[in-house]
Image (cartoon, rainbow, N blue to C red; front, side, top):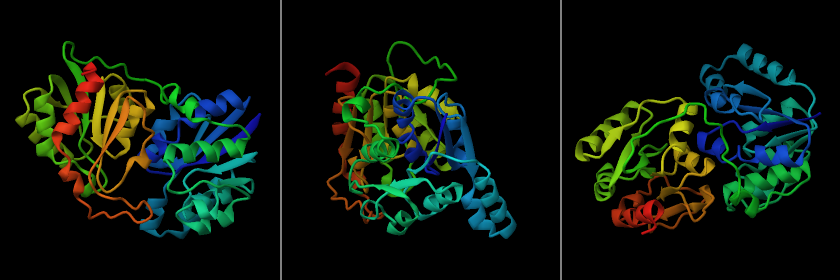
Length: 329
């Protein structure tokens, strides 16, 4: 058995855009035992994955907040007890993830110093992959993993991938009109498409709109949308595995550049991702998974969180693409 560790600590979107590699590892590397190291909050998404044999959680945010030396020592000891690995692959490419990988063992592989946001991290890898930082994140993930393990993941293979996550909670949605999920949240305010324009999109489409929310601020906005749109309703508050199952049952997902939106691509569900201060690099576009971007020019090496150009996107542009994806219009 070949034991491989993958370090991808956070965030949700990064993990979603990384986990697709598991099916290709399983196909091309016989008898491989995968240990995935991630932040504790994302563990449920991977603990239920049939191709992940073990999930080890870390809580670096808690360590940073508490500044507890004993907790730090415990975390290091726990990582060192994971065992010997043929390869430890750091898919995160940050100094913190490189340190975690190096604590686990010596056989580390990651991005080269000219291919990474924090070049110091590359000093902790035994072997490296060269691929421009500006390249598509899905292609970057494919290359760092496949080079580490000695096989190739092509774009054609990614286009024809199987759904990434298992469906653990079968979901029945309304019949009749198409069911469309709307992801209205994001990590920054400037990544959020205005709720008023979301209403314009929903009201222009004959659909059952389901508004996904993750915190009280988003819930308040979801209620605003539901009040303005007779065909919209709030989705239930969901766990990560429930969210995967719910999105997998929808006909289309429309959302901002954030983790739940990326789940649609992962599950082979049509999607429209709306971009402002970030760009199409964050998704793998297909005929059914498309990007709509504001007029803003984005420097991926220096993201401007004060770029609110997403507000300039015409709702009609989203409506047109939604009609195409839903009905071929």
